[in-house]
Image (cartoon, rainbow, N blue to C red; front, side):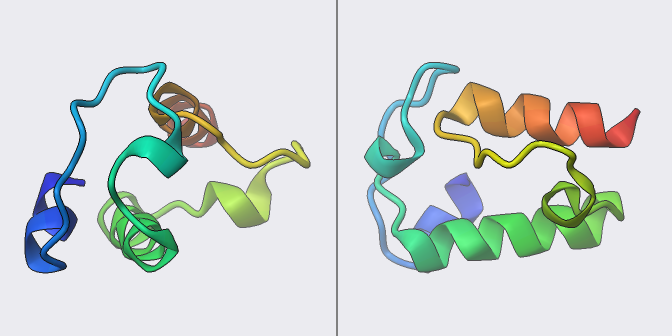
Length: 71
């Protein structure tokens, strides 16, 4: 998230597990870039393989989303 924020000239908020993704300082394009890079780096796409219908709403949920997909 730090790298994408820097590349896109966005000011990243102080992040914690409870930080809502909409409050990170990243817009939807930036979050899409983060997700694409995570897929490239980790080799998983939890959005296409997840049995959950929900979308992560916080930084912590996003992290757990990827952790669960990696299991």
